[in-house]
Image (cartoon, rainbow, N blue to C red):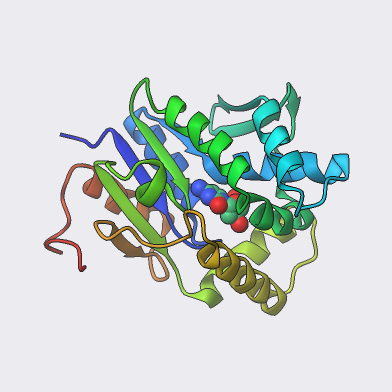
Length: 230
Ligand code: DC
């Protein structure tokens, strides 16, 4: 039987959203990009001039804004109070802000409650940092998707350039490292591999190969890998 909740966690730039979106499409599942939700709160904080240390104000934003993930064909569009912010949440400024904003307790509490509610209706593929460890510790398929830093930086630099942002691989690598250090070093639901997650290194794999592997894992086929290393 195919897993109902597929949790994909991992460091920045490992390709989680690309893979999660394709896997969800193949399974007819809902794709939930939890990073986009933290990005929306960060975008609102920037627009409203709220300091990233102002936990109460950030918590109010997270509790107040209506975040919608709308699926249109192959696209997953992100709306904040009815406004399409899909492009606005992907700027380097918002990427940098989302990390400190996501470490704030009231922000996490508000967004995790929404994430759990979104999965109540049917099959989901959810990607983030804490899905297998905190949001759905009981998820029936957990994957920790990684890739080498050079590869992650190259992929992210290409993505940024396609969006019109000048990007140099070395600087992007440093930004990814700093964000991962912050995301894994925080006290609340830090980025880390769940003990029972399958670690999937995508450095040498094509997108298609990673998707096939994820689908196999969702069917319970660990490819002879045996139980997860503890
Ligand atoms: O996946 P992303 O780059 O869009 O995520 C943006 C930030 O949000 C990331 O730096 C960490 C945070 N995040 C989180 O703390 N927990 C999640 N489940 C998803 C993202």
